[in-house]
Image 1 (spheres, helix red, strand yellow):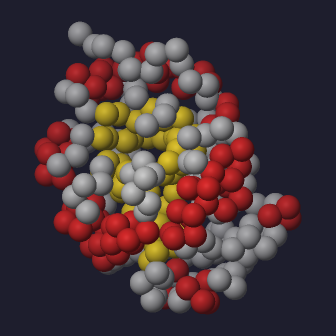
Image 2 (cartoon, helix red, strand yellow):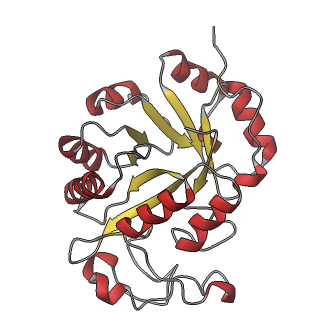
Length: 247
């Protein structure tokens, strides 16, 4: 996994979770992007972050209560800039086609709507098994929801998984052990050098979100953090050495 992962594509430059955002990340030379996937009313996995439509589209209501056909009519680009007017919601299968064409890897965040944690994990995992090319590097599944990750692992135990948290909890090791994963991802603002080195010393992969300045990226790298998520992935250069040994 590369040092810099494009957050929702390259969402500082283009509408998040859109075709334009993923293509922008590829244009910048980004080798892996993160994006959010949730389910429509007809159980289709689509790229979208929020439970409701209002912030990043011209629609109203809940994503989970609209069919894919209904969601296709929405504009998800104009809120960001008139340059992106007409951008449409992407399905997961369409996204896979773009990733393969551009040679970009993926970190797929299971972003379930309320009460759909298990269903989202299962459907997305099944979709990846069916549509992800065998000759392309496997995606990593991540989520704040342990229920979603556990459900996905039941369907696709071969796919790597990672747990997202805002602040690193005291029981982080037990939570990772329950999920059978060795990757933890947290908000960089709440991470200290001591906690970072504690985590890394156990052999756990540690990444931070969302890092948008070179100065902060260098600091995290000096602590031994393995990778970062960035809205502006071209502003966070790859350090000479991203993973350092700790005492």
